[in-house]
Length: 128
Image (tube, rainbow, N blue to C red; front, side, top):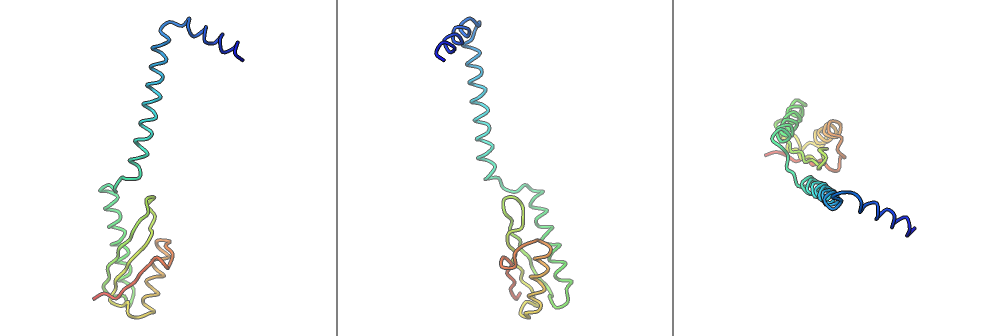
């Protein structure tokens, strides 16, 4: 094993400007590692872009409109929270008809169906 390594080292010495080639390789590897770490650090801290924020608001408005079209719900407001991968994580609805348990259950059923959110992560309150 030592003999093979010595032979390899001797071959490397015969290559012109081997020091520069090795240095360039080390710099390239260091640069790639640094870029990979930078992208990973920034990935968890990015805030939604304007288009993502607009679509979130649009989804809340669409859900609000649908809920208000259901008999007994009345005027309502909707807020949806999202995980980092963009899936709905929790929903809060305030609705005029939420004091009626049947209406409250309808609201929860609609939100569960549309957003695939567990019923325990949906809160429905009476709107003033």
